[in-house]
Image (cartoon, rainbow, N blue to C red; front, side):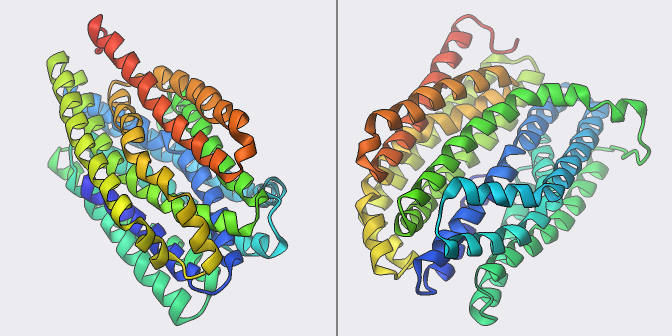
Length: 423
């Protein structure tokens, strides 16, 4: 899972690099804006993967084959319904993107090019979240690694071909992502079909009354959805407020967000493994194994946090220069690099304990700590430091990530002390 998640930011790095060398900040600013909105919409549906992993891992620990199939069917159906809703609402969403960002006309034009193509990958992208979560739940870590690796190899190859070879610009980057998502969907379905045979599971093609009862699933996912909504609100605020500070600031922040993606996907690799292992231990009613997996996750998280901080300290400026040769953007990004050097150690806890709480299926705790961290850590800190311009945005993001980890850790220790981890 660590390896598979490390490959994910490579796509963002290549997107930024190929667009960042087209000679103008508005290309990079446009893809930053369009990609942020797409990411926000798709990751709002991250509850599909999280809830699937938690439910399936618990069912796997209980050896409940009926639940392994039923949860997958319901989650796939919900993913397709959400994807259809996004496609139907694409024009109002694009209008809202333009109104909230207040970016230049050139940036909005490039953002729209990206958005109107990329939105059609929604059925594949959201289904892939469910299928990835299901594979994690049945403890098949190699599947997600192969899936994410294929997605990124196809995406990067097509990115280079469409953008540099055919000179399609931002449209080429979007088309590459759409095609990669559908290739990944086909591969993911093949992997899951093999796992069905291995575990002697039977897919039911008819829609039973129980399968159509999505209300229970929606209620279970409500807390995770709201948690994801607050998370994306903070990340989107970074982009939209950055756009108000000018195209150069927006483009510089887009470059720096790749550093945050590198951190998050490596840490999430450990967190995803924690989801599966903690969920399985919960299903088996083994509290000692839950505690063991939490300790192991924290140890590995610290190793990667230190490694990332060192890499960003020694080579951060060189990475920025690789991503863009626009002088103004380059200089602006280097100015705010110190925030990213400190970020791995500060943010480590929030990623890892997210995985633990998904495995424990304690979505309400995740929701409550996220609300507090967003209100106090992000928007509270931003309000106090707003006069510092873009530094205020990065101070708010750093405080937000740190407070998420602290509140989740405190909640975990209270549950562990009172022996309520399995409740």
